[in-house]
Length: 235
Image (cartoon, rainbow, N blue to C red; front, side, top):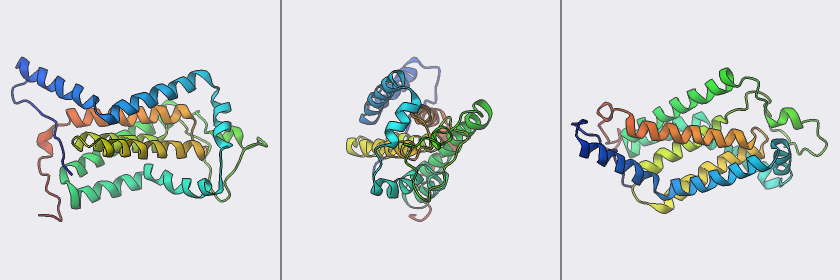
């Protein structure tokens, strides 16, 4: 697996360095991951504008099957903080030390911002289960623990898209891998909808938060602070 590094200039005042840096950013945004993500974002935005969130959530709830009931609680773990830490340490120890620490940093920053949104900015945003638990049509998964508070934004979606976006920027010119990363993040986001833990608007803004955090840290985190790429267990 090859990794591309953000280019930083030793002479920030030079015009051509600024132009080259801008070119790199625009080129990154043209990769298959971002093109597909923007298309998905447009589709989700159309749904948000055309459908009431409770109606849409109830429609999603009605597509249940026994095997989805079984697999979704496991799939949603891919957006959990514990998974993000495990993945980061795996990179640090065996794949690429620099990007392992970047994954951990990206998770930490994006997760902190998501929690600020949940608890400080939008503390009264309730989860779908709060509204639908008394609806006779609502399908409840046996044994699953539902939460009712702190819905906006989706923390799992934030984490999934933060990790996927950063990895798509690190992995050089592999379209299939880019799309696989996006698919994984989308499946985590869908699991939050399927489990009635978030509305579509929660996962959309969570995905945006994670994506923007990754882009900012990838291009603007001081590269001199993380210079060693050799993993600890592969010297």
